[in-house]
Length: 279
Image (tube, rainbow, N blue to C red):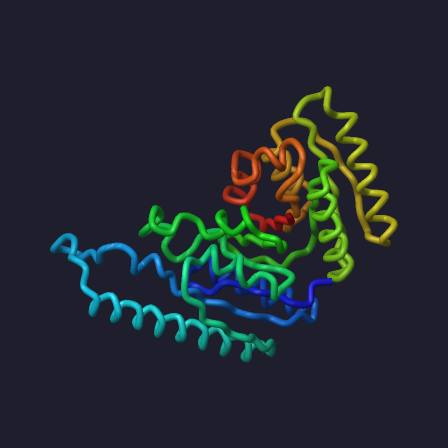
């Protein structure tokens, strides 16, 4: 069972949703909660840009001033986060880090069991090329499950787990079963066949996954579908009322080949449902 949760704080609307999911899960799982703000060192590795005068040359004094301003802002965000946790009765440990966000998350993930990140960050609209996607970069190297949260918060009420017979999907299923049991929620297991000829294998994967879930006394149902995986995942999640999707991040076929590609990226970026990716 998850007893340590770490989430990112950046002051963005998506970050606030990640915080609400972290608080909700910490309360329901009686888990320790840590909030991390990372002062993005990449903001200091490029020339400063003046709004009207163009590019300013390298100025150590200005860079030091910007660094202190970013640090002070991070400290304010963390104080506000801790105060919010205290207000709702959930203690939050706060940590200020400095460096490249995705790299720092990879380094500190060992002290937690679940990392929660907003789908987009504070620079997603103003400087997307500078920051890239912290979430995507972290997922590629994550060893801990990562919960990616959408634009709106809704308490998790039903879980869908995608299976494909791979070791990664098996670990994702175990996480989904444990979480469903801990939260006393129903679980839907879905195996997708991209072609009709693949349906027997999908049915086999679904049956084996369902047997495992039932062996753990999880209230689970198994489904199969044929078609484009990302589309079917989102459709079935909507049809069954699931508002958490759990996928293996390194598997066979549609999960492995499209990690942060067509299927997984579509599920993460287009859906309105939190997605937990498990390595």
